[in-house]
Image 1 (tube, helix red, strand yellow):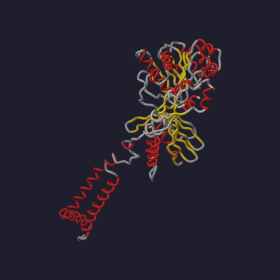
Image 2: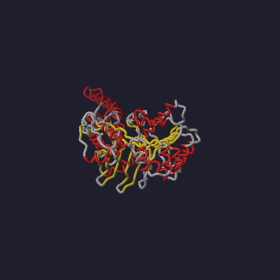
Image 3: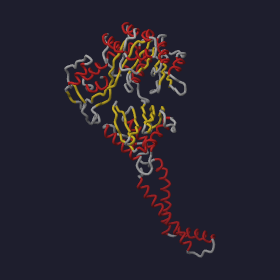
Image 4: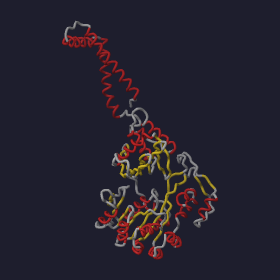
Amino acid sequence: MVNQRMRGAISGILTIAVTTLVFGIIILAVWSDISSLDDLIESVVRTAEAAFRNRTWHYLARATVLSFGIAVILTPLDILLARTPTERLGGLHELDVTNTAAALEEISRRISQCLTGSKKDIVSAFEELLFGAASLQASDVHISPTPSGVKLTYRVQGTLHEIMTLPAGFAMPLAARAKVLSGMDTHVRGKAQDGRLVTTLGAKPLEARASTLPTELGERIVLRLLKGGAEIPKVEDLGLSKEVTDGLIRILDRPEGILFVTGPVGSGKTTTLYSSLLRISDVRSGTANIVTLEDPIELELAFATQTQMNVRGGRTFAATLRSVLRQDPNVLMIGEIRDRETAEITVQAGLTGHLILTTVHAQNAAGPFMRLLEMDVEPFVLASATVGSVSQRLVRRLCSHCRRQVVPGTNQIDRFAEYGLALPAVTYFEEAGCDKCGGEGFDGRLPIAELMLIGPELRQAINDRKPTRDLYDIAVALGMTMMLKDGLDRAARGETPLSEVLRVAG
């Protein structure tokens, strides 16, 4: 590949050669006896013919033609291949992610290079930001206006990592680029907007759920990267405990009822739902009519009919659910129950021969019931329709190459004791950091969960409108393993530190 310095040298040679040839011919022509413009033209032509027959001028002419030919060949190559590294989406975009800190520094350098000089390349800078997020398998990208400038941040394995802070003047151009790719109105800055970002980095497609939020210092942009063509794991491969896995499979093998999956944003709920649908499809050998209502659709499922919600277009969960129930579905996945109407339709469908998987934001497995009762869902209908509730979180997995032994602190012992849990007398570990894990001390994430199976005692408690704490205590008394206990068991096996379990589930 021809570099920029060589191209400049060839352009200079071409300019000198052509200038020398043209002006030389004109000067020689002017020395002749000229009385009119026609005489000048005739003299130039005659002088040029004589020059090309002369040995010295002949070589100059050949050099000029050769330089011109090289320039003609290099011009398209320059356009197609010789763009600067910050503009190209090819080999120079490859990023070494073995060390997260070093990768973040490299991403910062590339973005800075795009925005340095007289021509600020916002498009390339934004591509570098997205490419870095995809390379590090970040779940979110934050573009946040602050008093000191525009802070760029990734969320990787549940932890925020700051990339850099750009001057405040880049806030609006970056926001505009995000809006263009997400189909938002670039002129609207005073209210929040949502969109779906779809682009291609090199040969790889990238999708993200985009949202804007007006703040005192400007618009804040958050991009939640979707998994695209990622493979859906089987339920048995989710990493859940045997108790939760076995109970979940029993629920999925039922013909009807409602399964709630709860947890905060980024806790793996969608993965659990997709894996559950895959299990149903495999077990029922394609005979089940599976329909999903999602906002947004994060993965394309070959075995299901997927519907994207569009509130502005009138395609709400409630309205779409009414229509779907007339499409003869066996299994429904409802992305989230957000309002009374959706809750009522969902509960009624769970009683009429449909298996329904849905999410509700709640702190634990007992939380969804009070949420729906507060939406004025009848307690006896809710109790009869529900078959189970899963609550889950994701904790960071310790790097097996560098983890080090640690003695549990008094504060940690006391916090587990508040929940009636005593620490087993085993060796515990904490993060250290090495080349294998990029200095982070962690290598991926794993789930901790609790599963509440709804039996006669819990149905009666729900019908009696028992508070969430009472429902939780009844479930534990009936044998449910608390999520905190599941996390403690993983810490006792050296899979995650005690501090991580308490941070996520304590």
